[in-house]
Image (cartoon, rainbow, N blue to C red; front, side):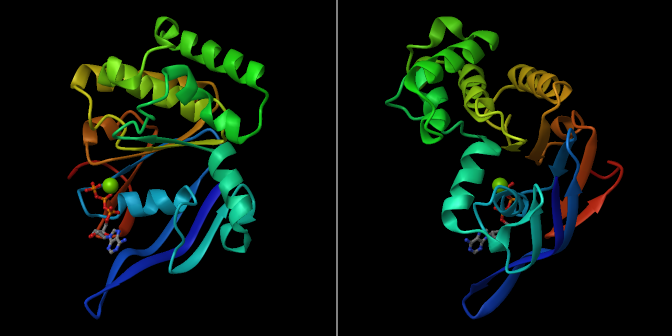
Length: 226
Ligand code: ATP
Ligand code: MG
């Protein structure tokens, strides 16, 4: 469902070229739960941004659901980002002046789903996630774990083919982080493809496959020196 071929991403700074992704080859099949594990500065978010069509590589090819991303126009890319990919971030990134249910509805609004159906679907998923009592609250009235659950509701509401999570437990305590991982496992059992990036080996091991990244180079394998 996703394939990166020989991806290079480099930046020019002060006349010097810095290679952040160094000939990366990476594929994910439908239904996988993969984590990308690496230390700070290793290139994880850069890779995530390319996977999520938020950024483009300097060279190499990236295919998502059968299309080569380089060939697509901005309107198509925006649609892919809204409907085919569910983003989950460390800092939740909920809109502070919108209620919980309004936050969750947002991707459906972009997708031009009718208001009544939007509200029904948002309430349904929030209820399923144990947040049915909180739909009219604002984000700052919720705990971190609850806010991340809201962000997960928002990410899955369009039924995206891929969930992309960048350090999803980074702002949570251990117990709450583990609950979020349980939730990811449930979503994966329901058939959702999940790609999660983290610097934490204890979080990474919840996935079925771990890919390590160091200085922009990818390696698949065991966790002995993580
Ligand atoms: P962290 O765990 O701290 O989030 P990361 O693995 O996500 O780290 P990236 O954000 O992918 O790391 O950054 C990798 C490298 O690329 C860093 O050295 C960073 O300085 C560099 N980099 C990222 N974005 C840019 C940019 N827009 N311009 C120049 N350099 C950049
Ligand atoms: Mg990062």
